[in-house]
Length: 295
Image (cartoon, rainbow, N blue to C red; front, side, top):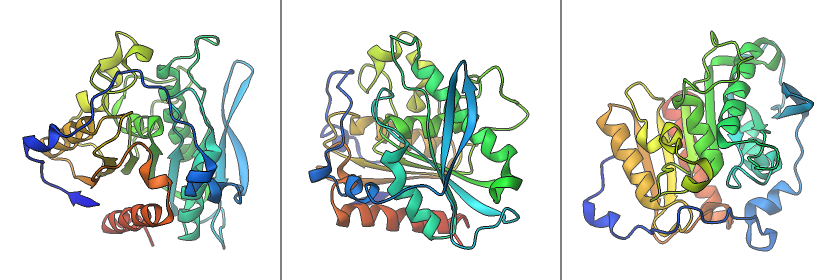
């Protein structure tokens, strides 16, 4: 892997993959997926309902560290699953939640409504849900044993998009949310994220003509949280070019941004083998320690 804080030369962009905007969402294959093997052995400490939409309850899957007490003021690691906004579930990110719980953090894997034409649920609803989740965590910090000023939002693929959404899209909120509580985290950890929803990126056809409203690469501004992004240069689903555009825009806006590049890596590469997974965690740990978000 290569870790960058400076913009890449333009010739690197030419090597980035460019595919149809609506590539089918990837599915986990346990046999070739180290993280899936870990997840099969894990379960959360408890589940909490953070939101009700009509007759649907949405839950936080909470991993509490050893020695946890409600009176604690621990850092909180919130992780969000991918699946093209239409598939998978909170279980997919249990390995990441478990890792940070073992480091002393309260870790949470978020359930959100999946986008579906049958239920008239859109990607905008997914965004609303994860922003509601962060607000719930902050509002209930005293019960969860966390410091509301030490929130990390992370996610893979479409989950990476939703993690970024918690920090970026202030105008997209559930009507029932208390807008006095900010949905913005204190750091972002993005894993091969959907970061560009234009026709050159991913999800454009699914989102529709309002795509630019929720495209992180097109909405960078000063004051966004420090961000580390992991991306492969041969990603056929969420093209690497989008990650580079986002990274350069973050730097130009005066935000802290680190881009960790895996040459030849395809979509989800860091989930497949233990060495790649461990390397991702080590770099993430170092990044969070530099922000004083790890003990």
